[in-house]
Image 1 (tube, helix red, strand yellow):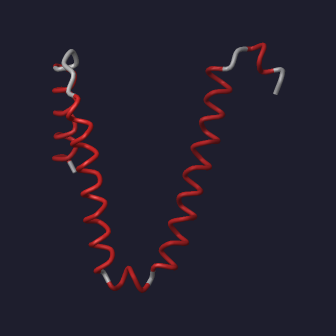
Image 2: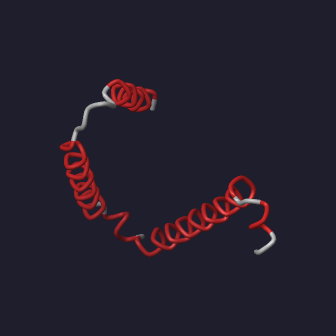
Length: 94
């Protein structure tokens, strides 16, 4: 885990030093890497019999987790907006 955080921080530091340069090719390589990782993840899931046999249970738990995460994010974003970004005269409207 420490190695991953270190590599990420090294990238942030390098990006900070090179912020005046434009790297148009980086976005294309990032998207290619994401598509490749998703494809390889699909292969790993498809070849794992235990995951495929329990897909209905795993899918339901995943759906519940996703809905909970999205709901919590929306509620917290609304609270942060209401307390920190809404002007006083707007708060009486809603």
